[in-house]
Image (cartoon, rainbow, N blue to C red; front, side, top):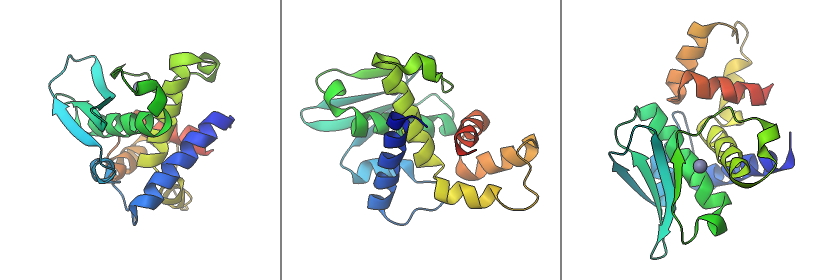
Length: 173
Ligand SMILES: [Zn+2]
């Protein structure tokens, strides 16, 4: 695993530890609010997921109110990732996310925006599906990673989309 991804993952674990006892589904909105960051839901264009900005010294996470709750959870975790990892980059300018591709390739991560997006996605993945809570569930005998039905049930428990779970499992193996 590349170092910058490792850093994003470690930061997500630190945020979870600072919050305290976490069980699934991970209470992402509460975690954000407890850090003094505001969460604002507003109806946005379909292709906009959300945004991260700092206004008058207050951190804000914007979420598209029209999206599915599971997608909103990923957006919130992603935007929190920007606040934690990219404070300098988002200070003074709103960082707007247009339906970020969750499966960005490492090769596109060499620099700039893509790298920030991959870091935020990695952070979001670990925050919503922490290794310590996910690994025990899939290590269970009888759990079949190729069984879509089982994966869907697991995604439901974590309140994430199936594709977000599949993306996460790739990083676990
Ligand atoms: Zn982003």
